[in-house]
View 1 (cartoon, rainbow, N blue to C red):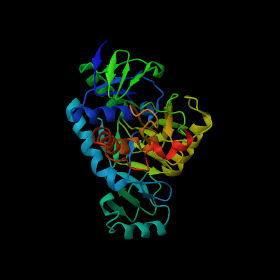
View 2 (cartoon, rainbow, N blue to C red):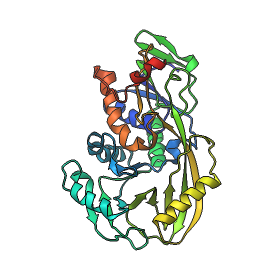
View 3 (cartoon, helix red, strand yellow):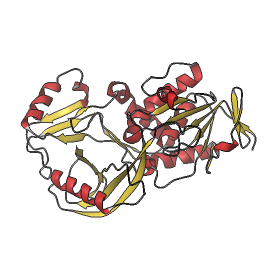
View 4 (cartoon, one colour):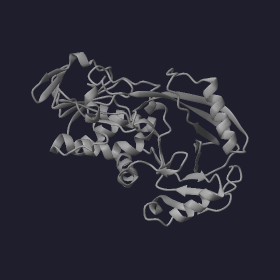
Amino acid sequence: MNKKVDFIIVGQGLAGSVLAHVLLKNGKTVHVFDKIEPHSSSMVAAGLYNPITGRKMVKTWNADKLFPLIESFYHEIESLLKCQFLHRVNIYRPFVNMAEQNDWQAKSTDPEFESYVESISLGPSYDCVVNPFGGISLRPSGYVDIPCFLEFTRSYLKELNSITPELFDESLIKVDSGSVEYRGISAYKVVFCTGINLGTLFDFLPLRPVKGEILEISSSLSVDAIINRGVFVLPKIDCKYRVGATYNWKDLSVNMTDKGTSYLKEKFENLVTANYKVVGGKAGIRPTTPDRKPFIGIHPSIPEIGIFNGFGTKGVSLTPYYANQLYRVLEFGEELDSEVNISRFFSLS
């Protein structure tokens, strides 16, 4: 194959797919190399976007930059691909006590938070949810059906003759000043979006793979929101739900475990009083980082090679904003946010 493109992208998970769409939208040509991995985090993840997270219910990092872009970004791709994978669903977070209820009543009118608060209830909103102190309904929030997004993106790239379904062998990269060549395809840059498989070029980055397990259940529970406290309960179809997720840094197998299943069942039972039955489950390995910020930037000694990786559990909300920023860095030489720039780890290379 003899072909010239602007960018070679390695990996067609969530990060690689989002980056490909951003580059194509801006008139760039791409060629993607990817072999489907059924247990990758992108194939297993629930795909939530949630502006208020964590046990302490704090605004997610960089929410004011990220969230204005999320829904319009994915909706535009839906229109392009003629499919639906973005599901706008309010997230309901029960309050754990009266003090938290009072705290959020005050925060709901604070300009820092008011755009993320759909409503506050001072008493139970759902009969089958443990929420005696009420809760907060958040916006914009919901989930992206990531496997659906990836499938339609893959078909689109095939139509453009812009994807090769095979593993990328980084030892075959040929670098010349200002260009790279791989198996007859030349480009200005190669960008690695390979999840937990950093390879040797970026092996100095302190990736922290984390296993996550998600249960699939059927239940008499009937809710029109994602319930999120300790675990998330994500409504699907036909009275089926997804419950997740676990975090395990030691067991990096791709199998469901009794321990993980027991943990999720206990958390679910503490949150929901409805009857249920476990009907399945999935496990995947997330590419997380020590400071919970992604790995983005250019290789310290090979300027033709870059990385867009390490988005962990917040890939749906992080990748649209930072893919657009990386495009401007690559095309116009703009500065990358220092918090995500891999230069923060160059002392390790």
